[in-house]
Structures are given as structure tokens and as C-alpha cells.
Length: 282
Image (cartoon, rainbow, N blue to C red):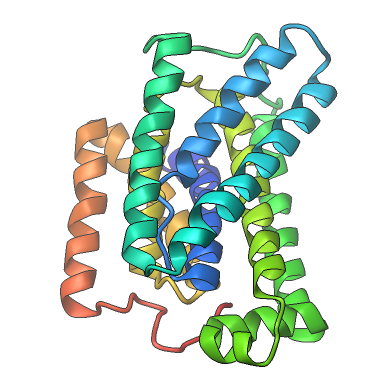
């Protein structure tokens, strides 16, 4: 039983880590917490469920992810970027308001009832895991190594590191901040789209599902350290294991309480996060 819980917790943590990675990327490039990030996950879930009723799974996945990416870029370009001139606080407050608006719109359209994908997913014989869980692991591993390579070895990646280090100085030296910012938001939209599809197939979705994942993934960012994407991933995976064990031996409320208790303790002892001592993006 313990082994099974570890196994399921690990792959649940992979999902949380993927969502947290989107949070971390946006924070590093814009120095804001985008509270609407997990609501774009909810949007992707609903899009996939609706499209899959009329089209095949591959088309539904592709279109859901593309719409999620486009929606993310549009929010950054026409909402967040203009507000950033007034400071980060108005942007974060706007993202929080946008989160509530998106939840309300989805509730009006789909009601608050759980909506489940029509896809019947069978566990793989012998290991007891679902295909979507096994797919998320290589996606996360490949994504983080590609990001690492891009940021360290390519011109645009180095430009992003310059923005992270000193945004004002990067603007002074004519670094294409807006274009690179949109690129980072597009990557976060990709992660949100993938996570949303996985949630839609696995457990179903409600308009407020994103809020639950916002608590877990944002806590993982703060505990791991917002400036360290590796730290965010490690803590995201550990949180997944903790949540599965806490729910198995207690309740869902206990698991959420434990995450928040860990968050408070870490913020009191090490406010920059467990892996946040170095000012770096990855």
C-alpha cells in the first residue's frame, strides 16, 4: 500500500510541478504572481471536453492547447503589460480579479456540477498507472532541460536571463522585452493547456477546480523559491506525495491544511524559499 501511495503521489506531484512551473516562469519574467494561471487550466479542461464530443482526441488536444496559449498571450499583451507600467501590484490585483471573472463565466456556462471527459481511461496492466500520468513525466523532464539549454546557450535565452536579472537595464540596452515576455507567457500557456487536459481526463472539472491547484502550486513556488525553477519542481513533486498520503490516512481538508502549514513555517524560517538563495531563473 505504501508503495502504491508513493507511486500515485509522485505522478500527482508531477502534475503540480508542471502547473507550478508556469507560475515560476511568469514570476521570473514579470515579477508578478498570476492568480489566473490555474483558471486557464480550467478553461483548457472545458475546451477539451467539449471538443472531444465532436472530434477525435488528437484534434481536441491540439486545439485546446493552442487556444490556451493564444488566450494567455492576449492577456499578457493587452492586460498585464499595459498595467505593468503602474507597478506590479495593479497587475497582481487584476490577475486575481480576472481569476474570479473566469470562474464566474465558466459557472454560468457549465454550472457548478462536475463535468467529466467521455474518454474511458484504463490503467496499464502490471503498474497500475494511467497513460496520461506516464506522459506527464517526460513532458516535464524534457521541458525543464530544453528551458535550461535555451536560457544558457541561446541568444534569446540569455536575453531573458538579462530581463530576470535587471529589467530596467535590459530595456535600456534595447532587449526585446515585450516579445520575450510573450514567449514566456506562451510557454506557461502550453503547460496550463497540458495540465488542464490531464485533469479533464483524470478527475473531471468544475469552475473552481483551478483554485485548488492554485493553492498547491503557488505554495510549491513559495516553498521551493520563486527564483529557482528546479526548486519549484522538487517541492511540487514532494507536495504531491504528501497530499496523497494525507488524504489516504486523513482527509482532503487535512492534506490542504498540511500544505498551508508547511508554507507558513518555511516563510517564517526562510522567506526566500528552500532553494531560493541564489538569484537565478533555473
